[in-house]
Image (cartoon, rainbow, N blue to C red; front, side, top):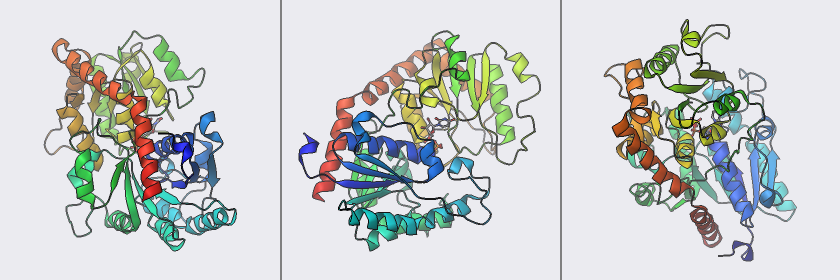
Length: 428
Ligand code: UDP
């Protein structure tokens, strides 16, 4: 339907300060604004400065609201996003989020005062104090879930009494407090992409669960910079010959795991592009790669550091597989470009997502030896070869990944999910 004809909503979107949450929320914000709704995207100055530009069709209805980042004793100056938070300081960083509550309250008042009252606040499960503020202002909340539906089918609603819960008690408490205050749950998924698990969610949560679609980022959303080292290296490689290796923004990488990956890439023998992040606790001057690694793989491998233009890399014709952690954002981007996956999950929802992708033969989950913390080189190499080299298996993975790509490319279905979401917000 024509969504611009109904009553215009004002939705404030306040994502958790992590790129795995910020980026899909920006897609959602842009899509809501493109469909005629007013959106305020709330975050902190350094984070907003790192986001991509917004499509012209959305720009007039999408405002960015920068709340000054609060000072927290012990948290280094300049740290705003989780990817910059030093190891062991996650709870301090969540405290900073709590201290944004008064500024958020002032923003809601100002919106009220200027005649464009906020109708809904969409926030993440860490945002208990922000949900309280919305509640005081009588603005209803939507809980944002940028995870696979599969993971919630596995884990259900976090329960503070469940001692096997992999989450820390502080995180569970935040989830429960936020969850109680939310009227709706918005899921970054669709019935097409997760046909088995999506329909189970409403029952699991006991609240209305609305899929908002998978929100694929627009092509080259990371504004493929001219002269980017990884992209120009890819330009010189044959079609579908390179495995891209990247583990998102907050993988708990260890030096030992890093060395197993290096050895696995050597053993596999394929071309690779590795977006390397320095593991927590490793001194800035310490060598990360095993001695001689770069010489031995020269010509067929490239290692880059810093923030990689991941979507442009995955879209590149030279890339033929994605070795990753099974974060939901990276999974969707991999599917968007039809990349079969080599999966090395470590954290909660990544385990569920990778299991589902493995079972559906969209990729291979690297086998983990019992009692070993790290994925070992032999198993990593075997998984890479299964999706890139072995003739009988690689066609199967490629064909399944391509089927998923067709689903993600269906723009009509994305519009439908957004319009249904808007309709639910109007009538709820
Ligand atoms: N990302 C990127 N460059 C990097 C690391 C991450 O562009 O060097 C992007 C990636 O494309 C994805 C997001 O950051 O959109 C990571 O989200 P995901 O859910 O995969 O993982 P998380 O970082 O939350 O573990």
